[in-house]
Image 1 (cartoon, rainbow, N blue to C red):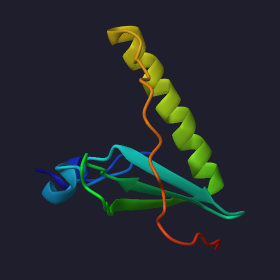
Image 2: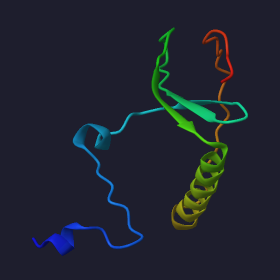
Image 3: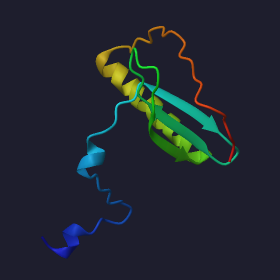
Length: 105
């Protein structure tokens, strides 16, 4: 392959996805906290009958990137619903969230 084909074109970003990250991590709970300078999103997998769960992944975003993520997620949910119908939001029993003290950055 020539060097020209390997280089990204102007304005493009070359993003790599390794096999471990490509497998993904299941989450059925997101806990979101924020300070003046950042949003912290903790992804948790809670299983029935399990008294304790661990944070599987933590993503830290600037407020600007959090807003961009909100818009991108809303756009994708809208496209999904146009193609597949409305996503039903079933009532969930409240989950006790006692993960310890909260802090601010």
